[in-house]
Image (cartoon, rainbow, N blue to C red; front, side, top):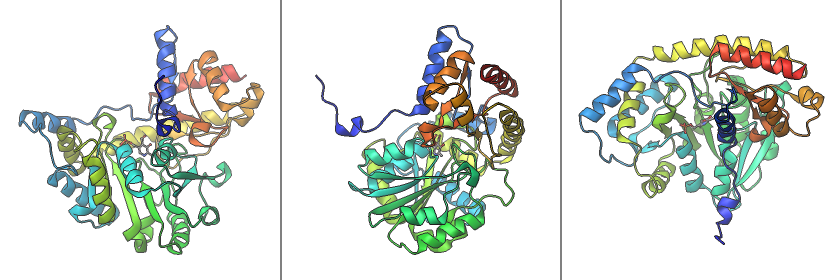
Length: 392
Ligand code: PLP
């Protein structure tokens, strides 16, 4: 018998991918499943970005690059941080990786020792706790309430901190809740963090541009520049430019940590794909109107979906601030369907309504369902009428 590592036995495969696979299985068996599990925009990558990739290929830009990214892409990232966030970085503070996922993975491996605690508010992006576990860290989950718009309060944050706390993770706008912290809320969290100078902060800004809340985008370091020296700002091109398959994420952060993360990357993947880097540079330096087009479509779908969800029996949904996810409570509906868990309910909806939803327990918040509206209005309307029928 093959003995696998404790490491791999301590983690679970990504549940969002599992739902996508289950839906694909049923489709292959002839079922007409509507998938609302997608974690990626349904738009094509904008043409000027694809053209840049073609140019890279034709130029023969197909070899290894510097591990941490090409100098010109790093410059485009530095310019982006300055332009959008008012943050200044030197090239040694920037690391380009194979997606935001690898950025976080590198950080966990470069930072954590066994037993180090990482504060993660729930609902969370599914991968944070497992990546922390792979690095032998201990996730400390802070549960939030829908009535407080799924925000971790300053009091909750302070209560979660112990002498072992090494890292606090913030993700705003959030996958899966769709909400974003306001400037005032971030200031309150910053007040707490200022009292604990040994704690590092990761702000995952992957959905920065998919935001319609008044007040615009802020993160912990834009509201509290004193935290600059111990904040890792994580971002990428996947969601903003519909480039999930290109695998480019990037960070700006403390030079010592960036150097350590680069060392990890140099012994795993080396540089991200040269062609994708070339395309990402075009995305960051080019016309940003493509973002607005996607954003407007997401907002129209959001408005429809939130209203329609609230009309379903046993479902309560708050308005999101951005992203392309709704994360309603299905507690009443789960109970009415006599299901023990949200996983059982999701399976029931897959069979009875032929709609694929991701159960909230995957994100640390059971009783909710994540619905992605990175799909057509027509699909959303059909999904809602099928759910309405199944729940009535
Ligand atoms: N962070 C959040 C909150 C996400 O939702 C995702 C993707 O689902 C990522 C990071 C990583 O994105 P990628 O690895 O595609 O760049």
